[in-house]
Image: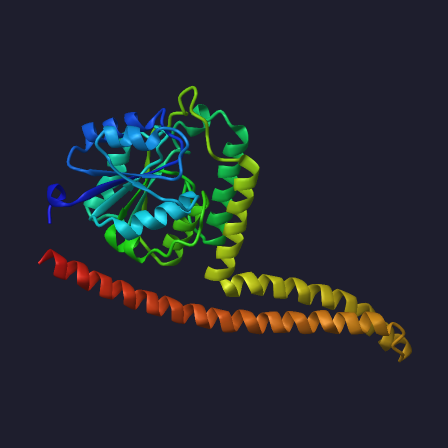
Length: 316
């Protein structure tokens, strides 16, 4: 199947983007006229829905609030060969988004990422705490998952059908980008990045992100997914800390016993043994969960194989 014969869907989650949505739709119509443009309105209180409809986009409503909920509905509802996802705030040029999508169309990636942070993000974005948050999230994920993704939380991405139809959306809000990145890393999907231009929102357009509350949700998501995807590492580290604390409490009691032949601090002995026992239980749980995770990965790979066979049959 050639690039020109592949079905392209542009996905635009929107919440109160009446000021910019027309520009986004026109931009994509000019750059990728063959693409279907889907705008999912997430309970906007302005005229986003009406403007998107007037501009000729396929407009639908998602009544569950939160970007994660919108993405879940998009991935379930829309059938395409290449999916381009951008925000409705006109911060990502359509020509750059198409460059990101070419990696999917050429079969060179399962998920391609529009990398803002290597381009104009830090000069265009006027919210310094957002810049710091992006760097923090990137550092955490790359260290935990031993990767080198340059932009974890970008809103400009492209996916193939296999990724979209096998991705279990669990997040409800803006932490969805972090979840996508971690899922792709854990499941061995081919990830590529393309530096793209980023332009700040135009005057009058307000960000829906709250630096601290949404930042907290993202960090909580990273911790949760770290626990779910790498249980041996997560619980193993906790076990090691507990064992070290218990050992530090136990050693003075043991040395005192060697000197006097008596145990003078029974409370300390009991506490240290309790902590050491807890560390061993934690280690046992880590090993059990790691084994369970491997079985989950095996079943996931089988489901991907089934999906691949279905795609091949659809192409015939």
